[in-house]
Image 1 (cartoon, helix red, strand yellow):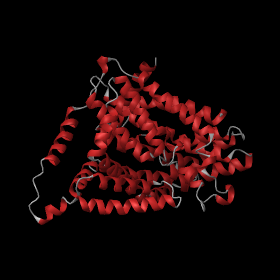
Image 2: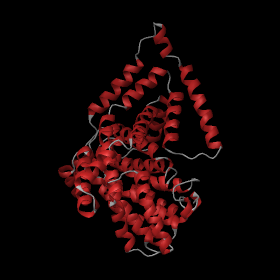
Image 3: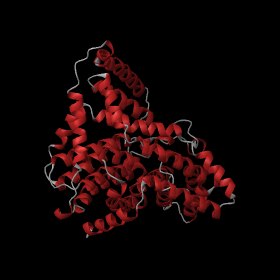
Image 4: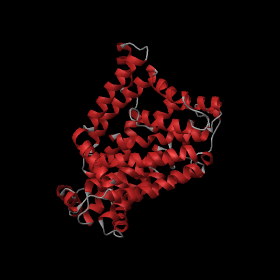
Amino acid sequence: MIRSTANFFVRVMERYLPDPFLFAVILTFVVYAAALFMTPSSPLDLIDYWSGGLWGILAFTMQICLVLVTGAALVKTPAVTNALNRLCSVVNTPRAAYAFTVLISSLANLLSWGVGLVVGAVIAQQMAKRIKNVHYPLLVAAAYSGFVIWTMGYTSSAALLVATKGHPLEKTIGVIPISDTLLTPFNLITAALIVIALPILMIAMAPKDKDVRSIDQSLLENEEAATLEVAIQPAPQSWASKVEQLRVLNLIIGVAGAIFLFRYFGKGGTLDINIVNTTFLIAGLLLSRSPIEYVNNIMEGGKSLGAIVLQFPFYGGIIALMEKSGLAVIISQWFTAISTADTLPFWAFISAGFLNIFIPSGGAQWAVQGPIMVEAAVQLGADIPKVVMGVAWGEWTNMVQPFWAIPVLAIAGLKAKDIMGYCVLTLIVTGVLFSIGALFL
């Protein structure tokens, strides 16, 4: 039954899911129309809101691009590549590959969503190269499915923000330590249930042999050619080419960066996106054999940035439309109006999942929705930390929002419609588990 259901959604997505850029354009039209009919904003006001938001997330755009290129460059270093190969060597069958890929991706995403996206995609590629008769789209879907629990882990935007002194809502709710959000039984137990359920789901969705689609051989040939090109580089002759091969330059910068990170975490620093990128950068330099090798790895990892960069202005415009028109407030208030103290965390989760389709950023979504949900929690006497996590868990609808799949797809060499059918099943199963956590744990 699960396999046939997955096949149904795969056919639907292959037929109807547009390219992620067109998905962003369609969402822009939907939000504009909704704001026009549901808010007092005029058509020209909405155009002003949209155009004003186009370049409002440029810093975030660069951060995400760096996650992809520095993460990909780190994974391409010999040490990491060999470690991942050894890790993958314990798996020998297609079903075990699907389960193992989503398990590693889930655990990596609990540590850091940036780590999880890159590692999951690379693990999927390695599995596809090693194991015969493995369905590559399901492998990549498994790699992306692990992303569903990133908000339950160490880089959870909402949980880290409310744990930071001076956050915007401190006067209302104070500083909430992660011991009251991320480390509570309701979050840990729900995360454990999802980590257990996802491998079982991936195995259940495994297609029949006749439906298996292997990895495109051109991807393997391109990777082998790139590896061979690096391996047969001629011995340096000029002064410039000799400097390009000096590993000591990598070591000097890498050691300096490692000292900074050690001091930063020693002072109680938290893991945000800038620190993730710094860690990727430093680790990549330290593990590369020369400066020019690291440059080549960065160039290879950045080949797909165009598709990512193109979409960010549109999501910046969507965020501005929803925030400045008051549409996000109206939608959130629909759900708070039907909530009680006990059910508010659940409705916070559902409403956040709906808004996440249009604002696929944990930090941006919390900035828009957080104040509304916190005010409702105070008025109803609800458990505020649980409401915070309910909003954070709403990122689960990323399983049908292809925005965050782009880095995974860029590394894997697939299109969104190739994997999103399987991700719909991930959405359904994890949605049930998240709901149980929000209502009963």
